[in-house]
Image 1 (tube, rainbow, N blue to C red):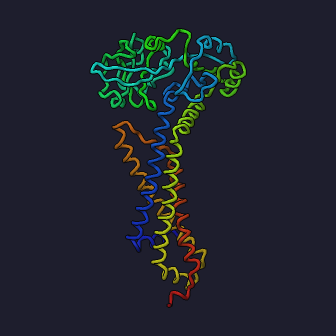
Image 2: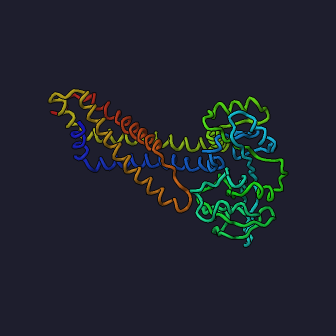
Image 3: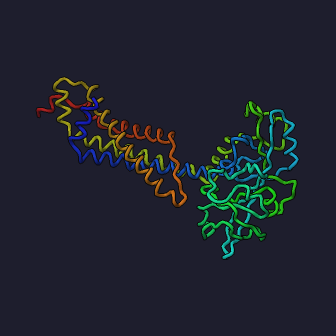
Length: 378
């Protein structure tokens, strides 16, 4: 069946190229939007994503907090109180502070200081994102990190050993990261002590406590135990807080509606454009389909033939679109905008492509089903 369908496709190459081009455009636009949304979602959850979630699987924050980008102050005493809960192996205080960085040339940029205790640096940066310097260099007084891609925000390239001011206090860049970025702000990782120094934060104030469960402890059970023991704070699984942070920002900024409408428009327009092209192709070959019916082919056989053509078109268009997406990802990577293309996303794209093509073929099916075999002799 597929062999016969492929012969039909090859017969009218101009029409086939038009159909495949339409599929590629639709799938590419959908993939671009999904990839960009994935990239932005990574930035929105950057505070949690860049932390060591393999160790600190639980975040304890103020009860009103549902977004890691908007943490409230809690008391340091919670660090020791949490250790009394069965199943807690270790607790790590962190301090997240909004600040202003001023460089020697006079450039001023808003930054977010991410302070955590040395030598664990549980809040990050991850080792694989460090390109220059050593994580332990952040233990030095006034030492901070800077990200390579934040040079646009700083209006200058990042330079190791560069002096700057943070909230009017002297600092030095001793670590350079790449792709350890935040949403609408530049991350500067540092030690807990340095974060206190730059922000003049009292010693009893912290932003959250990250909890490491004992080996074998069920994370969900420990989260429930913490929440039942404390009323003024709330424990989150790191993955849940990450998802909640993205969800809150998408809702508050209406970005979810924007991306959703663009993707929906691409799917709907692709459905009708591909459908009309397939209908036109079937109409041009109406005598061939009539001949098939005249020699004994039933509607089921002809329908399968058209659907097989749609599937072939779908796979060819999908493969070309994916290649273009990876080329786009490669081309944009140097600027820091890294499209997120995952196996799950590719499966979703393939499903959308098949939906567009097979659904669009219904237009042609309706025409062919009504075709009378005798019409071929008129």
